[in-house]
Image (cartoon, rainbow, N blue to C red; front, side, top):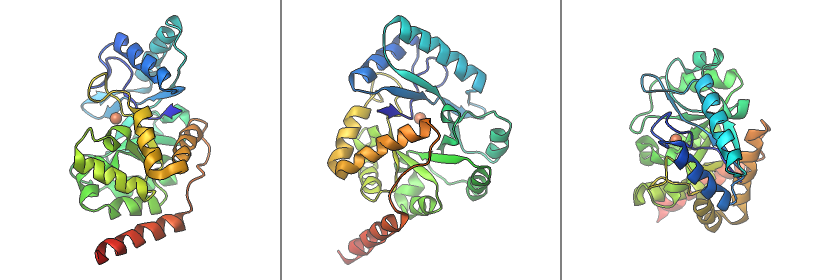
Length: 258
Ligand SMILES: [Fe+2]
């Protein structure tokens, strides 16, 4: 089991404060059966500059501490990139780390708006061969108000990751409800912890996965396979888009009739 979204690296963003806590989280991850974690500190202009050099340096530091403490956990580099107009240029310049140097990377939106330049940025990234994974769509107000927005991104071949914490109600019942809806309609392809520490936003991937299994049955396995595919830069073997379309629109029709 691989966690593709975490703020486990110490003292780099608003995630884990120190290496002692990183080790505590790593131990808990090992206990939950997690074999690898992608470290994805925020990359946000003017706030968090998780440059490739800095992320690699922190990864090496944590890897050494894991080995010293006999914790068996693989660590992979990445960032959670905040959308901006110049993101494609920054990708081209090698300023933004993808997940384990694959074509996949985590893309974050503002909580309350979808910037006007989004379509251009998404298509530029696609043309460049990147595969952006939109993180926690359930937490964005525009998706909560109109989940069709996510449907059309997915139909266009973009990907999305639900937070385990959202499924578990950490962000309240409204976010939980929308997270459940997206999962049940196969509009997300990944689950991640998005852990920030040992408190409220801790390593909850194991518990989140249990809930995902209750909601989607054996289909939850696909989420784990997708995470492994990303690490190896492989294609995803996900649900037939026609089936997603049918289930999404049939669900809409049913809710209109109710
Ligand atoms: Fe995050």
